[in-house]
Image 1: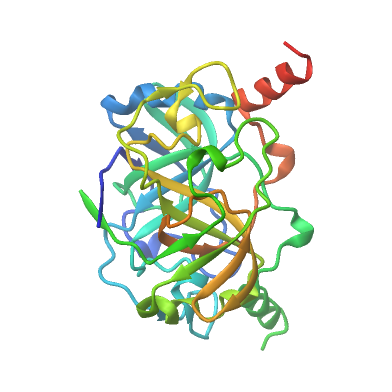
Image 2 (image 1 turned 45 degrees about the vertical axis):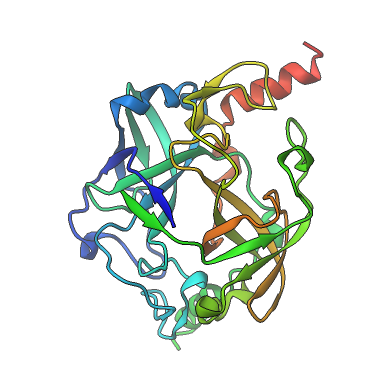
Length: 151
Length: 151
């Protein structure tokens, strides 16, 4: 077992899971704040040079896990490691946010899909993306195609 | 505190940190295997439809953390949250790999930068990238520019 601690928390407009946009075509444009604990502030040095960040966080209001589940974007079940389900063996969430500005130990960001008060485990700079020509999105692309066809 | 468990481990050609390519221009083309524990295999259903995966893992051979550090790609110190340093408050690593094929509970992937035996915490499908036009890479872009100028 590995013990992880909170390095701060998310300030977001979302107070409960129902208010977070989900499903096909959901946009994550919400602004929010990553509030880092004072003892970790020094670790933010030079972060303002990056436009995008990975945020690793805890699904702290989710309990237990399910290896198969039907996501909001489809009507068919898929393996948990092929979805973003909160019911994971390790309840870690991953979100790419755009860094708007830094105000001391508060990072103002766009693209928040976490609930208000969500514990943050780590922040990493976003450095590069896979070649878009190479990207395949499995069941999600199929669900999008079915949705467009009205199936 | 949050308790996390291993869901499997990485099989890689890298036996020690010195053998992992690092620094400016390092390529991560190494192939390896993500070996998932039998009790989590069902969670891999439909993963083979995705070309790329996020792998969350533990820097299990790193001890302690430093809020400031000089990465292999620069000669200047930066905050830990602006680097991929293993010496993090929560020693979680994040790697995007290309899924080559699935063989039961073994995922053959390209782009491994983890050591052999590294514990895996989670696997998520890679769905989209930020607009490349919007991407800024802070100190890393500056270090690359200095390196090209021979400074």
